Image (cartoon, rainbow, N blue to C red):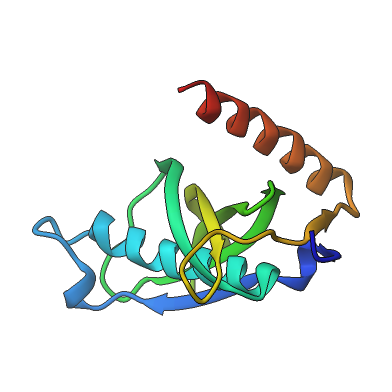
Length: 152
């Protein structure tokens, strides 16, 4: 591994205001559009952590907990939860932000990203420095998800 980085070193945030192009036939946010934004945020986090180009290996978990509609503001926040030798698990949480600034969680996704060299071969990623109890809990949950994926 090439050194270690903190979770805070690679956090990313994206804000989207929903327009008609992002809505499905029911006037709600199209799930596929949200998945695209989640993938972009996850890739930015993984690139910041690894210093490499990355590819999405899998979406381990994607849970929709609420709807969003035209003109709603969404805030997507991503951070590293676990690292392996060449892979990184990234959590991306999506919040609906009201005009008052209050945020309500509407989606949680966990993605596995792999760092790639110029020949698109997996390369080692930095370790992860855990600084808070929340980061330690995410690490342990990420390790459990990784073990479950490896059994499949």
